[in-house]
Length: 163
Image (cartoon, rainbow, N blue to C red; front, side):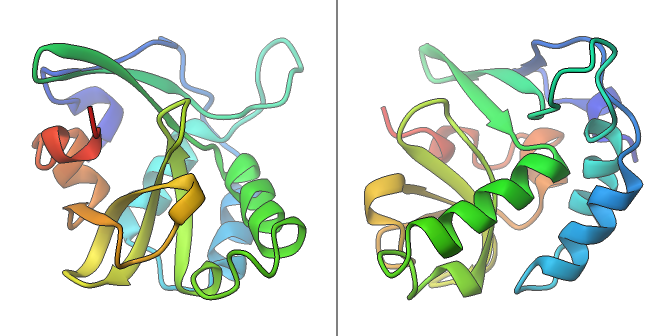
């Protein structure tokens, strides 16, 4: 299923033209990730990780999400940017994130201080949200089991943003 073509009614992509492709970067994500990533997330990366038409770095799409009475932003990293973030947290921020970075895969943020990641946390494997400064499973909330559940079925939309 193409997640972008089936977004929940409370979610809109702000960049109407996804950058299809980036298979090499997606393959590198699969090989680099310390955890097994869900197939729907891998397929989603193939929809958003291609080259941009203007030659700029592809960071990934931004979404507008209706959460309660607020409209909030969600940025899901392209494969290239997810790899950069992994290296940043693994190398540049070490040892601050050493306890968790090898147990998760960062997939995005809220353009603020919330991080979204896959991992096997206190509520089992799935998509979690936590504050950047206290990135750990104890302080993370599970949003949904899969990206499809979140972006298409709307599972966890109100959990995904702490407002």
